[in-house]
Length: 150
Image 1 (cartoon, rainbow, N blue to C red):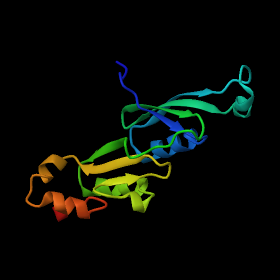
Image 2 (image 1 turned 135 degrees about the vertical axis):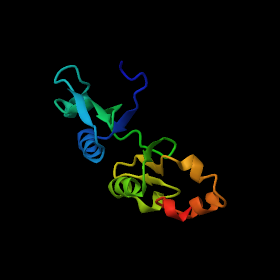
Image 3 (image 1 turned 180 degrees about the vertical axis):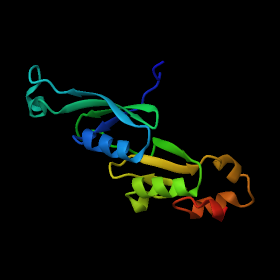
Image 4 (image 1 turned 45 degrees about the vertical axis):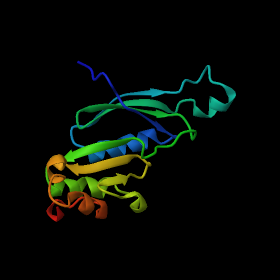
């Protein structure tokens, strides 16, 4: 059965580059389909896009996504992020090293990648960790989550 809700990510001309990057980062990932802007029927301001990637359907670690090359009108914000539930510190370290590209955006396990997309790199048992004494103040001091510091 196809996934009912599929996040669609808006890019400014670099959707293919971003999708290739994400597929390299996450296991069990692949491109499903790529559509291209047509050579006919485009408005004057769109004609520069003829033959370029329009959209990509892809899978990241078993989850379906879409990507569209649609221009500079919209940017990613922290209002939407993707949670990566990690089995251990090694996995947290791996994803953090791959996805964190904006140090000033790091806080409490949140990071931003080189495309501006926000990620939460957290242990899968985060809810249990937060039940420990003084967990919240410790979390507020962290950029990348270090499980042993809870």
